[in-house]
Length: 392
Ligand SMILES: Cc1ncc(COP(=O)(O)O)c(C=O)c1O
Image (cartoon, rainbow, N blue to C red; front, side):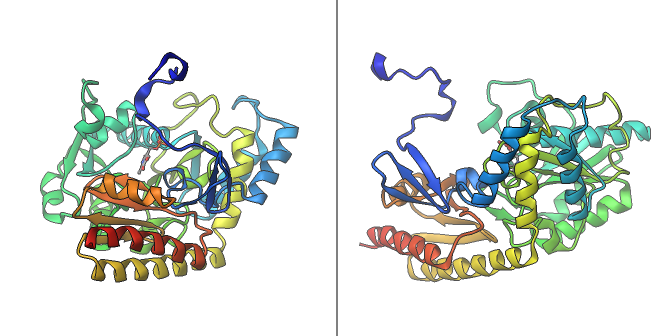
């Protein structure tokens, strides 16, 4: 890189090639006004697409009134949003954060705090192979994945990792030190791997029977992405704690940790905090997103669109040998290929279909939840074009 092009941003994200100047719905536009179909949605973030008029209007209105006051004062929209989140879920209480990893940190504290309050002597949290919970030390320690933590040790103690979807191995590791179980109902970064519904139901049962707190990470798979407001609803279970972010703000930095009153018994005055968490700008957007996404008709439409997309991708899986598997849930879908997933991802991008690679040699397709059948067809045509290159 010559001096003129030198970047002053820490090079943690590697080299970037694409630059976008505007977005509308499911499309992004570059500096030549070329249109890209955005089936990455940031990384499963823009739940309502780009610049949704209702969100633009909510943010604009709030930005003219009040940006920030801190949590030393009453923030009415924070109360309203928390109330609506609780009404729409298992939760009794909400702590607002600015990102997914902060929501995870809060949940870890809730688990440790609960067992400390009740003097059980338990501190261990069970997590799973392939999980991704973020980049803070709590998250790095929980997921125990060297890809993210190499060179940053020592990590925190008290986390045990078990094979994903393996009831027998999970049973074997639970003991009288187990305080909580942390799991993504659909693994995102780990390769778009859904937890078996039976596995989730088993975890719920074992948690209830042994006073273990069930902590779900729905940062990527929550907020309508699965076709239900929260993914765990498919398993008909309720967690004690849940981390959300990404889709909750549709692009505005926002996250939350939801909990039952019973679980967050230790989260008393001074036990936790955030300068920005729950600030009026974020609350005005989040409230509007939840009102739209929690609507039954909206969720039914997401479910139908995702089944349509799934069917089309499965047709491609049957037709093209280069696809090993299509998997996922709702509008969080993965294609595992026999070819290099990074190369496959780049080829799709060349035809202006944005996607995000994930682990286990997959590429991830996470379109905005407002995606139309026409846009799904457009993506399928591009994927087919690329697949044909491998068949030739
Ligand atoms: C399941 C899951 N949890 C946590 C995180 C961390 O979220 P953030 O990057 O907002 O801190 C991510 C991010 O990709 C995620 O997919």
